[in-house]
Image (cartoon, rainbow, N blue to C red; front, side, top):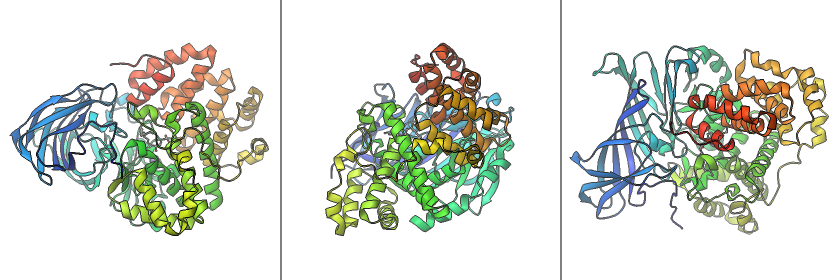
Length: 600
Ligand SMILES: CC/C=C\C/C=C\C[C@@H](O)/C=C/C=C/C=C\[C@@H](O)CCCC(=O)O
Ligand SMILES: [Zn+2]
């Protein structure tokens, strides 16, 4: 077995491994910093250990102690995007198997890439500030000094002090709250994560949050202005959880809550354990993806970001098996067609010879945010679907998936380990598996070597939709229909004008039920700007700046930038809104628009 080295982390994960974090965090909304003290319980993996290295990013370290004794420390060279190694010299020598408690006192930077601080004006309630973290993939190090690599898994206990008018939630099970003994204007919230997790799944949200029960083990959290609509939107959560348990075994995390974040959250969802993040533009079908991560990704975790497809490919496969159970096999096929087209678009955007379109790319000196795409999701799914067809169908392959989860639960895994178990599990099908084009699937850029998904919805099939057909579509179906149109060649201007006449899609902006329809508007405006329909440009600018989901914000800004007549306006609009954007969104859109990164 080739040992996996994580090129995105400086931490000494071969020499030692973190088993537990004890976090004491003081959230300061005046200065936009978190003052923290973290006690890492670290197990030595080698003899004669007297030092260890943690990941940090833009942290101010004021003190380090080891088992209560002061320890010398030094920050190494700052990397352009992977942060700064924290080298700690222990005041004693340890042997393999021994534990040490390393305590680090520190403060985050106001520009911490894991954190977005929102002003009251950026919230729904407009009265209080808001904070949320997003650690995946390598941003936890800007919030906590730690071994910021998915090959290290640890439990944690946290005490978080926040202003008493605000509520704190974390990706963990709540353990009560009490007034802060050091400041009566603040409350301390306590959390326990008893299941070992990688650092990228540490999550915190602080705001004027309310919750509603949506099931025996689930609440939905958001600002009060959204919470009842959110409770309605996610009422199917328990049935999805039960369906997933029927497929792959018990849900081990206890609580499954959802928190609906403000529109600036850069992703559709994030699978933080016990607390899935959801963007307000989220369709309930995406929750199936985040629920599936409770097994594939959170319980069985990729050893490094180069094997990210193990998280996302299996999760998309499981998400679509949930859809198959709750809807139909035809629906699973429909989603698979959309996924293949999403993959095609990604390969076209990155370039078919771009090594980042490998299923297992090298990420040495590569920024994970810049490398992120649908390739691990949809090339990963297509590969697993191909294997499903070879070994005898969905029920047969799900037997492997369930067994793989049971074998590697609570640990981190590499592609090599996954492949070895695949051959072990299907020991009577080794001849079939040996015929797979492994190098073509794993280590070759571009589209997969085999297209084993059902026949594509042909272009003429899409154009054959009548007005009545489209009007009969539900909002998720209409979104999928418009998204399929996005994968086709640009629509002629006459077509989008006709569609506006018939469906009046621009009016969605004022629609009350913003959860589902906003995605339709995103996709619709992208179609219009790509058709170079000038009347749609003002609304496109409005949507591109009011929301922050990268899946829509980046393509919309790119399309406006490519619309020559509006290129400068696109740049000006971005510069005007950059300070209020999520740091990751701002950095990626700046690259797209060829604008200098900000160093605020
Ligand atoms: C090959 C790339 C390797 C690692 C990249 C991993 C993470 C990159 C970082 O940018 C974080 C991504 C977070 C994604 C969160 C949720 C997604 O499942 C959904 C994204 C698309 C959407 O908005 O629906
Ligand atoms: Zn995912």
